Image (cartoon, rainbow, N blue to C red; front, side):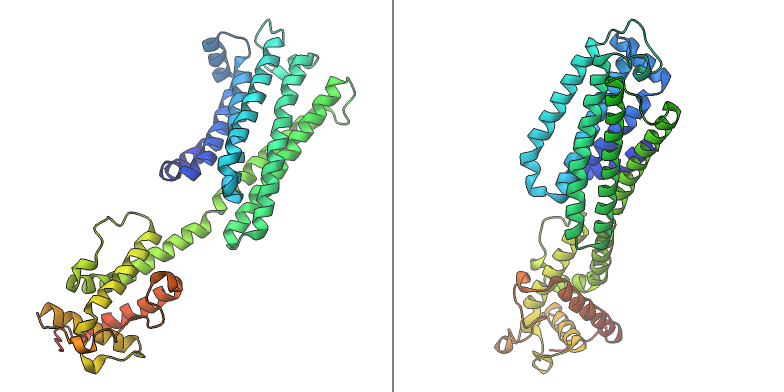
Length: 367
């Protein structure tokens, strides 16, 4: 399943830098899980020429995954801290990996074993090795859970808030998993009987781990839904405005920017809105005096724009004396003064009215 998630998130990771941290985390989780397959583990040991080297590789890859989760959470909840926190995040990961490597090398390993933890449960370096990893995991997941829950309370969008809560709960469960493993190791280290039998503890710990991973995957999938819905809305709005944009910019081609539109629906919508407004301003002097009304509704404005377009294309001279009295939005002349979503709604209504006018009188050439 983890490899499917890696493939699913790959296109987003290629397109957007901020998605690469979580993709790296899923890649690390998938790779770590793969090293647990006996055949893969044997191959890693053979290549590296060391008994049980696959165990160390698994945990170092796990450290990379944990650090990537933490970076993703910081980018989502505290983006202003991302640049400052990254060196510390990397440094802590390197220190933990170096510490674990040293402890791993200190374990006397005469042969490869099927279960590193069971085979060396009486070795203090082996216990320290495992304890270093689970404490790092617990600390990182606690920090991630705290940031996610804090950000979820402030999130304005429903699905983003739900995604952050799921990520917070998932990383919180990851904290519980790390502490559960750490407690078990401490009991072993001091040779104290653990309250649960091994046959009961291991399935419980595995279930907590899988639950944490599932919640993190779900939260990561849910959080972008608002973004996808917003992108779909912007794409649909731009599509509805495009016939009006095409007609007006045909008569006023100078307003069209030379730069390509790109693939971002929000940027496309901004461009369409800006160029419709600029084209309407360019055609303003051609609007017949009879159709000039600052308080005109969408239908009247559509008639004025249609007549102005026809007049311009027919080569007529503008009625300069009345120029400047016809605007799409009389209350704001600059885009940053607008309620952009409200302006999109007004232009959509204008586009629909313009379509009706152009369909009913396609050959009109009012001066």
